[in-house]
Length: 186
Image 1 (cartoon, one colour):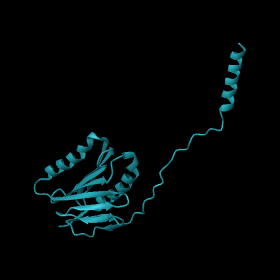
Image 2 (image 1 turned 90 degrees about the horizontal axis):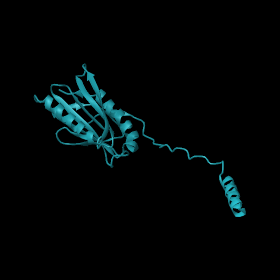
Image 3 (image 1 turned 180 degrees about the vertical axis):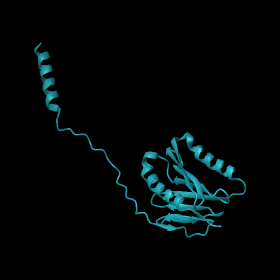
């Protein structure tokens, strides 16, 4: 009985003195990402279209009036394709939307945003694809009679949406600037 009492007393004392009330949980860590200030310039390559692009990007001239706008520091590129409209606008729009909804398997949500600028004759949509999709931002724009461009953002890494979200938001502002400054050449 005495051993039993001694065992409980020692266990109780051990429990009381082993617990330290100075325990604090570790603070949450936040990424400290710094992106360059945005400065835009007009596209210097001759195309049937023009728009503003960020100065710290690298432009790669592709055949058929296509472009690749690279973000070397972010390991990302915005691939832009161009097609002239030849009585096939409906087909081009369907193809653009097929490419967007091809990512529905991995996407958590697809958020569309429409753009209408009657003065410049620019009509289009931006699609934000949340989740671990291969392309998190896609857009298309047209004048509905002669020109059609489509763009898709790709990162040179396996997609982990929560990790690349700050970079996606940074580039999204550039895409919005691009869409808002599109002008078609005759």
